[in-house]
Image 1: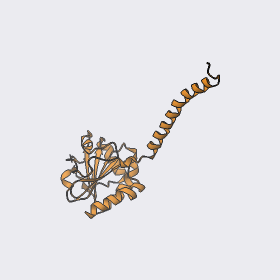
Image 2: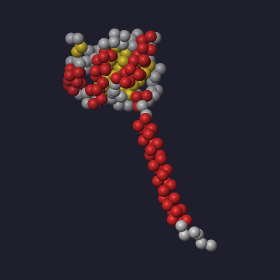
Image 3: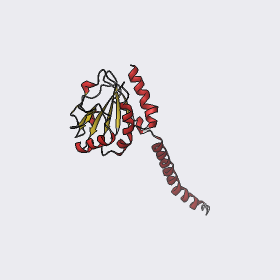
Image 4: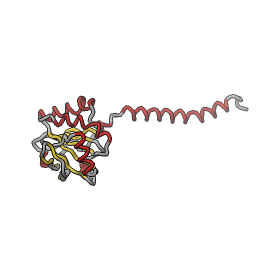
Length: 194
């Protein structure tokens, strides 16, 4: 018995179109998830743990209020609420977030520290001289080893270290008006209240 003449081409079309439809559905789902994900909320294994042992030399020649800015040491964390910002002069988003760091530097309840990541000292100084230095301490991480210990994915990233010396919060990406109000300030308020 022979098959109906119209059924064979229809079956062939189905065999060809079904994988294509499945692929397009998976691609659409992937793009939707990629576009809707908030990368600033990537979890960190360091939340709730002591800040990594950090002993970084100062950025030579950097001053604030006419005084040399010290490097960054983990001994400075206990007793202070510290915001640690990992930045570099070559990082375009770091240029965008500097006004927000300047705003945070005026908050006397917190201490603002910076880790200068894989940067040339002259470029880093020029960057801070151009925009203003918000950091009370700025350590140089020339080879990136300290940033790896902090779990840095890329610059900029910001960590909130509580008075007990433990990491309380991590923000991936630049500080913006939105995430400053929505995420960072509430975490600072919690850390200051403890």
